[in-house]
Image (cartoon, rainbow, N blue to C red; front, side, top):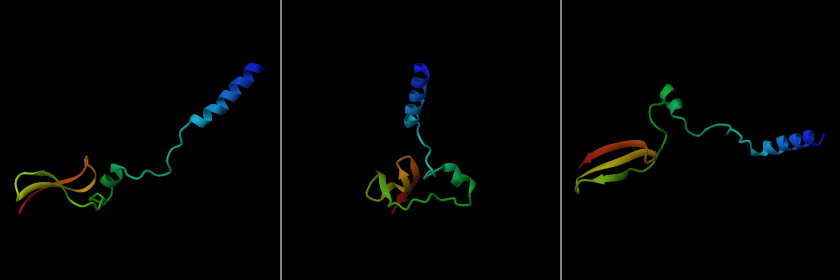
Length: 76
């Protein structure tokens, strides 16, 4: 009886450690690959990531972070 109560109590307490899945994720790349939307939905300002000289530079645009975005070579 004592063992059974300990098992039941430990099972009940372990339920608090279980993680709950989020209702909807905010970003999945597969959503954009399979849909008609071909541009990432980020409206972020262009950031210069490499400057060659005063007139040539590389910018990162439409980015979520440093790994997800588009880079462009600019020659003005």
